[in-house]
Image (cartoon, rainbow, N blue to C red; front, side, top):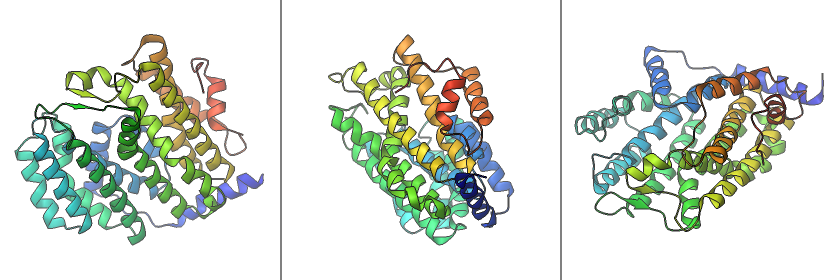
Length: 339
């Protein structure tokens, strides 16, 4: 067994020895919500070892609740800001009774018409209850970073006009937005990984250096993919002065740093599930950028491509493989425009 392989086995055992929470009917319902309100994360999170998968599921759903309040098309900006402020206050002093008060109030005023998002808001008490059951240090990480994201969302909503239109005016503002809604997520996940896997201490500086760019790159790809829909809703995230070419270039730069992040996990012998969880969205973002280069802004990848990429990832050799993303790229001729 290689040194990296030995470290990976030790890391896997360390995570296995942490006692997972018992699966409950409430968590089964949250798993269903995850599948209905996410595509990439619903595929990637089950790759994680337990109990990390439970923690990331709850954290993701909490972030999606915040995102639903931020994107509440039926509410004017001031109501969205008030709802986000109430959620931030809840996170500062978690209370199941307060969550049970807020959730039905939000659902009854219907911030949107998406039934899955409304069901997600209704599940706020279950999400809060699940997070309260996590070890104190990990619960604190989730609540702290989610509160940071909510404060940033509120700041951008203050910039929306009375017609609920939001237009970012510069590349710097776009980068700040991507950091708020996705870069901080990269920092949160890194904190959870490093705390759960002591072997990652050797590469912790590298992970921290690239964590935000990892999330920002994925967000930039999503912004370009969703640009036609966002434009119809009065939201312009890529400034007109910036241009499509520059946005694509920024995405590729950040995805290059994401690949460094994944390679660092591998070099430290991280559990294979963590490596795959991080590698999958990078591969999917690369394929999406390829589609946008060929077709234009708004292009998406097919379900068949998603399934093929996941198959390539699961077929990649274990820790002895030098680079799981490179291995998948070599196996998939469709990924021809890589950083």
